Length: 320
Image (cartoon, helix red, strand yellow):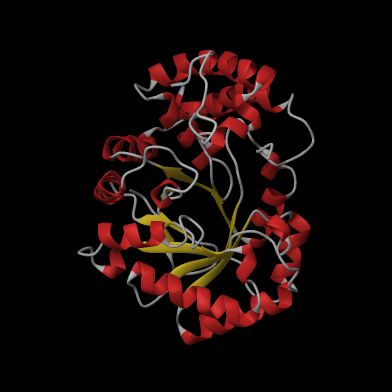
């Protein structure tokens, strides 16, 4: 799989990243470690060598599962990205969290270390970004991390963080059906050469087309509270999927591959895609082979707006 430069670093990432929230099991239904391990290994074998996780995914469990899956893969073949949560943003907490992640992943440095949510999220204590960035810069100087990223930051928050150190990536929710990042964050990222690592590029599975009009989620499934799966938003999504199917068929590709291919063709953009099974992981990798013409990209863009033009002004995907 062709690789891309992460921000201004010399780190080479794949345009499709393996997302591992589900490997942590928390907030997911029916996930087994054995299946997660097979999925991670299959992703790497298929060319997806950039793996994204976080300390909060199962309180380190996702990181531990990744370590099991990749214990015999040469370190320089994999790019590891993980995150420190919003309750660990004080200077010493960041250092301690990094050490825990290194131990969980069984590696001696993290390629990309990210602030998972801005300070104050989920009623956490407010910590000045200068303090957090100071700790991250220290970790970088020590060689424990190679690059700094942020996740779920607004443009003003990104700009403030960038005053205290080099930010090489941002991780926002971004898909054909959820496009807030294009309004303010993307122009800044283009200007400052910051990689966009999009999570939920399949809108939590909606863009796969596998959920019918009458689908009901288990109340424990986090998707039950996702705005895109509710009411008129869900109905518009079904209409858009019907229009996308002929384009996918033209390329002998799945709807999921089409949605990922569209996203990784956008400026600065890569897609973090989770997989429950090895089969799904291999399917995700196939998206890198789908070549869309400028006309097709414009056509897909217009179809996506059937959904996005009607969303409310709150850029948070979940109704918690």
